[in-house]
Length: 322
Image (cartoon, rainbow, N blue to C red; front, side, top):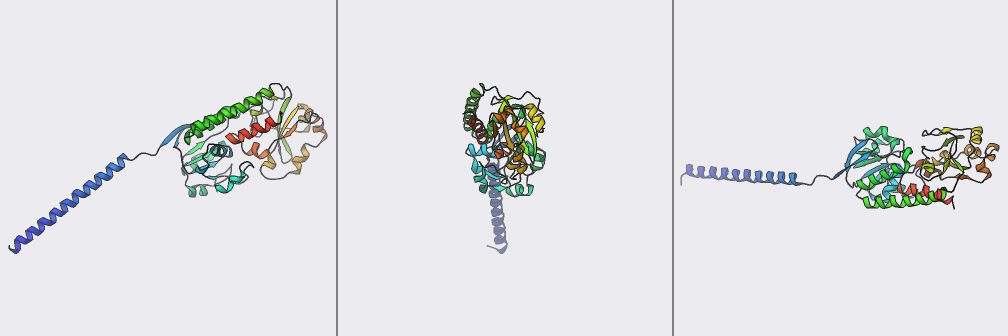
């Protein structure tokens, strides 16, 4: 064989190997394309929140929750391990033993955006307190805004529990919780149906008083549980209607529920304690009948609207009807 023939055979071998390599590469690319096209897309679910329809991950495993009511709902639904971040400061007593399990990612009124970004959650759940931050938080993860409608407290609580049950694939557990709460409500209603005393809810805050009646943040005491409101027209604003001693005596409630906001946020107030110890209060029917009822302030002011918190609220009221 001549030198020239050997050269031609060598070149032919190189071209053959190159062609085989190209074919194998094309086959690998085709396999890769097939794998990509047949991969299961990430599951999502669409729910209605306070802003409209929102698409979120189905059954997420890394969630930030900046609302105590929604947090206690997830715990009640058995999804505590999915929560990685929350507002750990000033947690109500009924949640306090869970604080160490979570990263602190802000407060009920202001998220810690940097901490949330570092947490990299799949979903962020907030209430209307933080709705102004929703767009900013959406740069980190999908955001669900679940709020309580004071004009339809129980209806909105059911809607929120159902939404969380849908997101976390716990629809049956959510339905069961709603049914149980409804039974508790009906048990209280059966007792309040026989009570004619006029009722007022009072919020104490650094030495001042605000009154709440139907359609307010504490309105479900009347609208859902069946207590009779006082005759006076009370403004149904978020912070209630400011009231003084003479005004309170004029309203003259026969049952007075009291929530101490100052105590709820962790600050003792001698001024608040003194508010109910004066001659005007002593003249009210509520005082004379021993019907001034101090509610658990951290539960009633900081939380509510969740499976556990709503249960505890109903339970606290029911205890006064024994």
